[in-house]
Image (cartoon, rainbow, N blue to C red; front, side):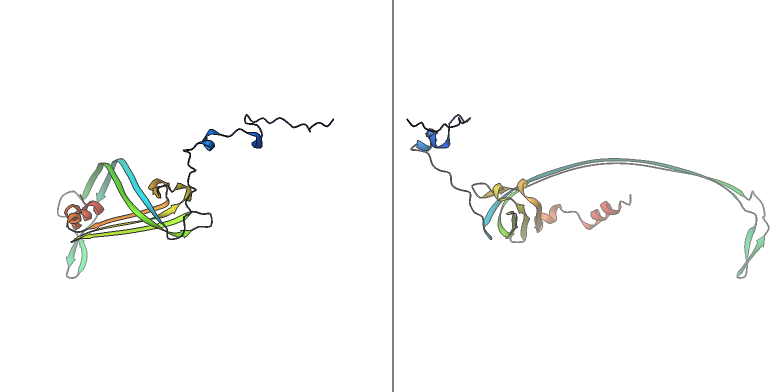
Length: 205
């Protein structure tokens, strides 16, 4: 009699790969195999969803006090003799003077700023790095009569961060750089004038 060779027992609940029971999902009539990840190539478009917010709160308090005392004694008076100077006797009064100077400065400043940027921009893959990361750039310009809106964006993304709908979120972008500009009458209505900028820069008062 011949006996079959002994086989080691597998620790898997499903047994050996060749003897595992068929999974229901593989036998289902409605199961659809997911699409493989899209291969991104040079110059392919990728939609960037920008949602950035920042908030800065700063408080500063300055107190400074300076005091100086001086005693001055004038030994000789001077007077002009033509174009030269010569000693002159003191006519009267005390030639000694005492100075007391006290300088006190106190300043307090509070600053709170908040900004939110939200827009959607389609970028182009301009380079693929050796590690597979994608370098993207996007530029957009809208002109409406005298109003001009310009938006630019650049950064580096990983291919796996691109969603199935071919979009990527701005918080997934490395080396992110966003440039957003506005020119025209609307911008002129709320931008600071030159005198206000001078006051904010040099603070003369």
